[in-house]
Length: 282
Image 1 (tube, rainbow, N blue to C red):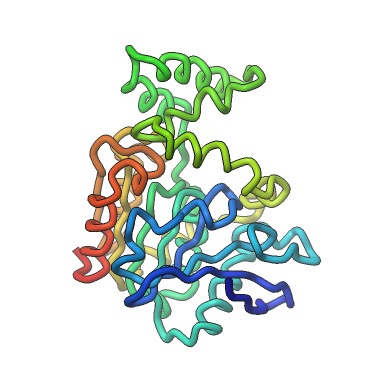
Image 2: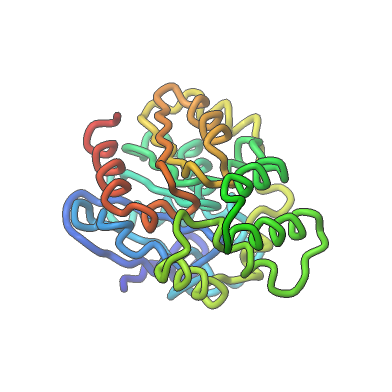
């Protein structure tokens, strides 16, 4: 573990794994400790992964002002990490909710980003929202077998605001291409790894200005990979395609039989695809 001090005096931790060119990795959750990213399906065998624990998560300190959990304030943390690492320009990866942090950073500091990788990103920052229809449409792709039929009923109740105790756990298989031991372990660790107060504040009022962010990203000069899971509802491949089209050099890749954590669903395919993009921009 390594520690640096960010703009407001908060000590933030990051973890380094692997060799090669650095890739700064921002975890989702929202506001989940970065350990769940692991080695990103073996990508650490090709890149030096620098996993940031966002403020108040993992080994990072709780800030004095908890309003700074809001994602737009955390852009300055990413910039402070770049300066601490001494990188003129950095390749940047954001997963899930942290896709928003990566998007806001790219909009604010386009000259500091090498290539941008967005893994199953939730694109609130550009005004694209996952609707109940998106979630249910993706969920129904699994209909006809357990545990998915039970999961579809559970996510329906969650989306309708009539959730019963345990419905989040029952819906969890829909977030994975395979509901195997690795998927179950990642889900089981989630509650302990996530800062719920920070998660609630992450997308609070004022966090996003979609027209301004879209305008900035429409001029973004570097290559962007948006990697979606074929079976994911947040975002669906169609919504991910809308996001990719915002960029002058956006590339969409839909990983077959994958959901929200594609490095678990097919690790070799995931690591190879991301490394190819980082190496070539295509």
